[in-house]
Image (spheres, rainbow, N blue to C red):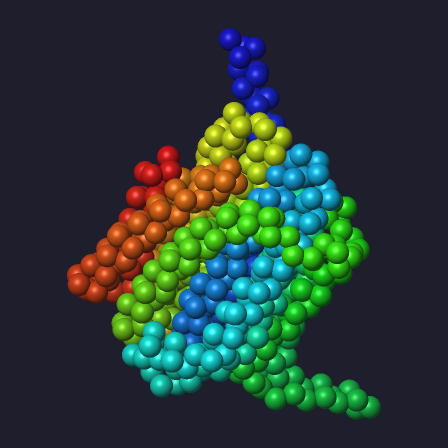
Length: 451
């Protein structure tokens, strides 16, 4: 019996170390990604509720675009991970190049669409918002639209590096992007005035335009660092010649075969989220601001879960490449359990700090009430429901099973989150809090399908 217990303990230690080693940089990276959104939200809050509402509205569109990009990179990440698992670095490099080509084409098409139809999209989605909010939203989307192709290429290169087992480099580049975002954001949003006698400089306050420009510049710097590293610094992937970018339709078909269903899943899922945002827009500026602030806080708290989800996809992809199929389920379920523990611990820490955290955002009195209700419910629901709902599908995608995850996600979102979000939030009059309750029902249904 002691030998059995010892073997179980050793297996637990090995799996913990393996998952944490690959996820720790991902956690740090996700923290800084989330901080970028939080800093932008706090700076926008300093401008006024109209600004934070506009940023929150456009973030809903931006999250849809980012999710589509991330889904498209999934194919490249999985293929690279499987080639690395088989120790075929040259094929991994070729697959990486094809993923970059596909990301470039896809992102340029998306950017052109929003360049042409930005105004009608905002008006059709958020026409009930106040005029000053609509105007600010137009300005913000006009500028960050230029960053969409930049972000798509950055995400693709990050996915390639993660698939090769390198999760640290994306972390460091993300940290750099966030540092630049904070610096540029402060300078451009508020303006600066320096007078040293022999030298003086003064810049104008650009408000929400400055917030968008800061994000654009930070993302551009991140892409430059990514290109340099993958051309000259990476050990497993070295894209230092144009020959890798010659169209290889066979590899592209494999990448698209994994990426397209995931993109459809992600796209329909985020269109559903966008629809719930429309419900909230009809509830007034205070509800919009509350949803934006609560969303940024909850996304920060969910960092370990997101990191474990990506880590599981990498580990499972490499196991498939090594033909260790029997270990896939154990890897996934271990990550689910560890994710629940970590999310629970983080929620326990944040609960007594809620007022201190909210003081950073300076929400209005009505928004404050909504935010607290959302957060207190989230402290309970997130540890219990999120891991079992979102970590298993990440592992399934890495095995090539992208259709089942797509079907479950789409049905759960459109049948449960939207329906119950409207029922609770609009029909029963629970407002923005009711929309969040609809999301938790969606999580329950997902968990039942993936358990």
